[in-house]
Image 1: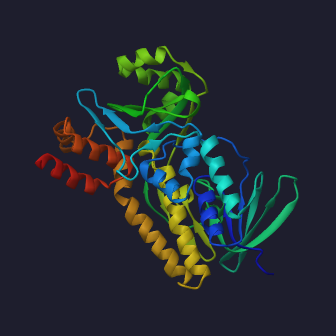
Image 2 (image 1 turned 90 degrees about the horizontal axis):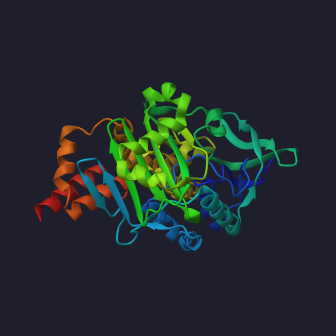
Image 3 (image 1 turned 45 degrees about the horizontal axis):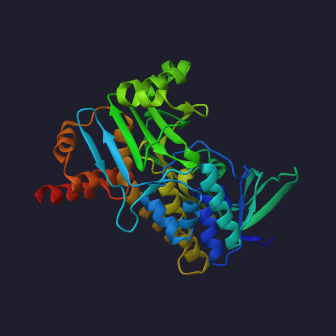
Length: 397
């Protein structure tokens, strides 16, 4: 049976639609399926960090995001109680971050994939992954009308999140796994202005952040160690709202605001999966996921989309063998995210920073170059090791 498509992508959000868009722009026949319809929301991190914003600019989509009225964030603040650090998260080429609602961002990405020539099927439930021997060759599933359909492709890409149907079928090796660390929750408020800032408040075993999003709303996200999950789930609302009392000046502001949505939450694993095998590849949370405390999920999804699409292109054009191209994709991913993965998992414990880090945070307060570097490390703009070098250079001035 011939392949109807070059590539089938499972999942049409931040990893899937860009992967499909980039491949379709190269002229490939691409099918994207998702059980959702768009626009729709999803539980997720919210921040499009500066490197994600740079990707949108490369793809010609940044002006579309700006046109939705999403406010830019040019400053990140970190309030540790006795010490407060404020810096720029970006670079001269990509200086700001955004906190878009996923109802807006995901729809923008789906539309871009369709414009590029990809076929997108919404309300499509994948029921089976098709194999010939050990190679994935397609999918079967149920369309919005209820009919069962089978589609084949040269490569199937799983961009279907942490509970990936494709990953479940191919059972890739998992590695670098860490225990569950943080119980994180968020909600949206009106009348809670934060002009151009994302504010982070860090206290012992507690933390929360505040960022502006679409429609004049502000998102607050916060939580506590996973060890308290069972005890606190009996009153998530009470425990979540109690976070703000740790910062009296903010608690006063929140009392004047109006909560517009329920409180959403999730516990996120920290794990790597081998992101490829015969006839298949994984991108975004399907292949690698970490705690949302550093808000890197959208950035990682965009980076995976670019790297995976480039590797698939090499395979389909015959420039490289499948294992060579996809092996390079895996090595590049793991090398790039390795340091920030460890840093993220350290932060997600909500334990006080190690003494050396506490001393460093105190020392850089007031040094703008060093504070910028701290904001950039938390935004994923620079690596933790590059942060150390940047601070050393800034403090030497």
